[in-house]
Each structure stands twice: as structure tokens, then as C-alpha cells.
Image 1: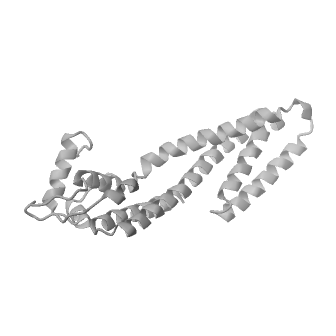
Image 2 (image 1 turned 90 degrees about the vertical axis):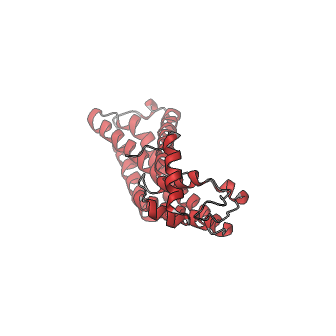
Image 3 (image 1 turned 45 degrees about the vertical axis):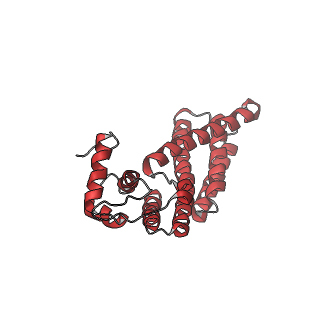
Length: 222
């Protein structure tokens, strides 16, 4: 799921760049908004995945050391919150999480040898919140590593002027920035000819931009 979302975002991001160079700012906004929606979904999916991994580790701890009632309460809360988050995006996953939660609740009821007054409900809820917040923070960092920035706030100010092969006029949009975003959107790989074709500039201009990025320490050419 995360890989498919990343590929879809990459496609929309590329179209956004192309639309900007075609001076089609309304269409560029559409693609930028689509990227934002994709990333919203990806963030939810990723944070839920990380939280679920924490849940699995907690269940393994319970299995190894016991204390079912005191340990399982935050797990139930985490699974419940994950189910609510993905219910509108991936209903089948939400249904499976609901079944998992039912099993966990049954497990909790069956562990009757531990007295209920020993359970700190408030502490369990705090632990669940902590797990979710940590998962969301890690997911946010992974999102920054995986998805290139969308500079949609600059779109209304952008004015594209064609670049001639002789280099007579240069667009207002910084070519180095666009080449850098192109590299990011292609997982660090760059084809001079493909980049030039996508951005509608002469390959020489792309090479110059790459050299400036390298000299400024923004990229490493291997």
C-alpha cells in the first residue's frame, strides 16, 4: 500500500512540475492538491502500520511475561484507534482490526485471575496515546524522507518564460530548484535528457543546474 501511494504521488508530482512549465497553474494546483491527499492517506497508513508493529511487540511481551490485563488495555485502545483511522480508507483492514480487537477483549475477560482493581485505566489510556504519538512522529519523519516537498504556496507567484537554447531569457522559477525536485521525485536518479524533456529546457541548462547544485553541496554526483 505504501509503495503504491509513493508511486502515485511521484506520478502526480511530476505532472505538477510539467503543468507549471506549461504555464497551466490551475492544473498544477490540481496535481498539487492530489499529492496532498495522497500524502494524507500515506501518513495514516504508515502511522497505523507502525502502531500495529508496536502492538505485536506488546502482545509478544504479554505472551512471554504474562500480566495480561495490565498490559493488554493499551493494546486494545491502540487497535481501536487504528480501526477508526483506516475505516474510511481501507474498510477491509478496519474489519480485520475489529476482529482482532474482539479477540483481545475476549482474552482480557478470560484472564480473570488478575483482580480488576489492580488495573489503572487512566495509565492504560495514556500508554495507548503514547504509542500512537510515537508512531505518528516516526511516520512523519519517514514521510519527509520518502516524499518530496510540494511548494504549492509559490504557484500563484510563478511566471514561466521560455528558455531559448542560446540562454537569452531565464524563467522566474529557479531551474536549480526544479531540477533538485525532479531528482528527489526520481529517488535520486537523473537522466539529463529525460529531465530536460520534462522541464522543457535544453540539456545544457540541466547540466549547468546540476553542476551548481553539486558545487553548493545540495547533491553528490556518483
